[in-house]
Length: 488
Image 1 (cartoon, rainbow, N blue to C red):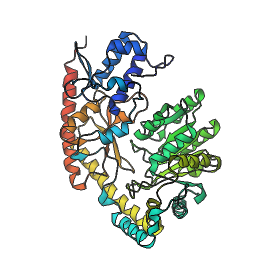
Image 2: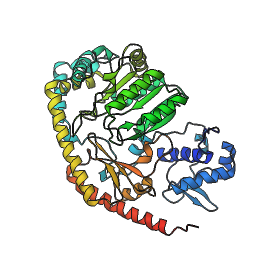
Image 3: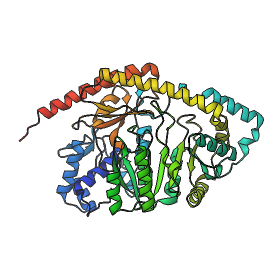
Image 4: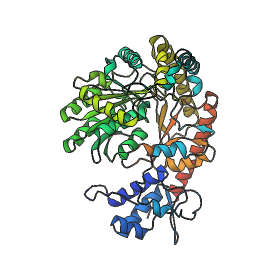
């Protein structure tokens, strides 16, 4: 197992090792029940003392990620220890970081109630309008199926999107827009264009899991900045910038994923000023700023940008059509050109059919009522989930009531590990996203994210009630275990 240790870091080596192994467990690289390398092997390959390795394994055991069996070894927590995969040795030279997003999406057991999927239920999306648009396209322009589109994206789509963004008080021209295959490709194109191995990226903490994975896959060094009720803390960021020179600052300022927090206008201006003064780019990820329940968020950071330091990423797949995978990067001049070049290398342009089918939906006569209806439906769901949590959740549980977006961020007592809780809820086929997946550095294990937009409305009460019942039992067990632990 290859683990890069920073021997000059203030973080103890045991903590660095445990975090690296935890990442591999959470990513699915180490499967449930598989045996970890021995203490002697890890000590030799990592060039640390056996005592340091044992300390790291104890940390993992305290986090309910591994089970140490006397005389047999250390096993990933799960089923009973199984025979080691004979191909494991041949796989060791291969980079062993499988994206955690892939793990949570593909490696879960089938869920009866899935609070982990951050998406809108299909019944709330404009399926019939998409069908009509597709039918009209194929009837009147069948050659669209055998045509390539422009690398930068279909001009008419960019024109319609520019009109939409202008209505959102973000003044852009079609020439400043690059069409992507969803927001995730947008993040990837930014990384390909501006980030290299060892470059520093600053993110909020916690942050969007897939963004963390994308930065790590490029070999970037991620520095995390915590948040308060106004979003990313500028005092922490300023302190970081006194020592480090990041290439990029990644932020999700409006109804942040996973916490739902909103960055204040004051903080948005401060963040932009800091970026300009240090020469860093800002990647502003706008997943769903239109999905507000108690008034719109402050202006986009990009709308305040006079120097071209902000790359604005807009995904519309989640709120209109996940199947079409259409997103947009907005940048200017010297920043846009490398992004177009990266798009050229990636796929020579997004599928033309997917782009054209979105055009009617983005026109003002359609998008305005669609968003209004979606806000109304999701606000009703949010309010219902809050009512149910107030009724059924244990007193020790805290949450942030989101002013927009799809998610609720729950905080449990510090003694609770939500990865262990997930194993209990999965037995009842109920899933959520453990908060540990949302940290680039040392994880906090007592948080979790619930998405209320995808579970059928008729299942919300059943799902929250059962989840809270399992949570109450887990908390009682954890408290009982703590009260019987000797203090000497």
